[in-house]
Length: 126
Image (cartoon, rainbow, N blue to C red; front, side):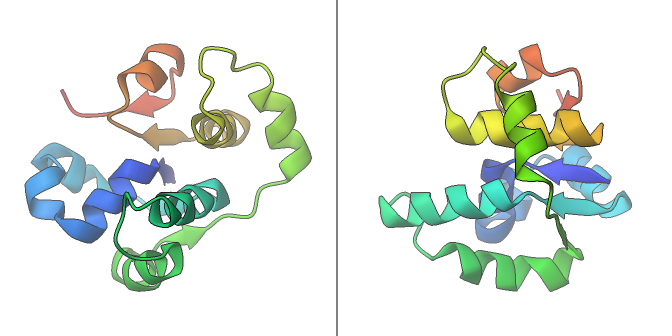
């Protein structure tokens, strides 16, 4: 199972062929995909500040059945404990999503260079 970072979800919703590299799409097609509740929260935040055009639920409603996304429900206390150790970012969404990958021991698919430099479980095609 692999977690998707927020920007990957936005790209899969808006233009998967143009924004997601072929090698990444291939991996996404061959593995079980998981969605953090913190991605849902960040999507809604991005909608509210005008950075995405549709609410989080509309994105999830469209992608979940198409991609067979598993909507995760991790224990918040554990994730917050792990997140306190991830002092390489001040972005609360990056911290919580990365903490979930660490706590679950699962890959996080992200193009974010900072996350990939600090999180051995993060992956993106080069």
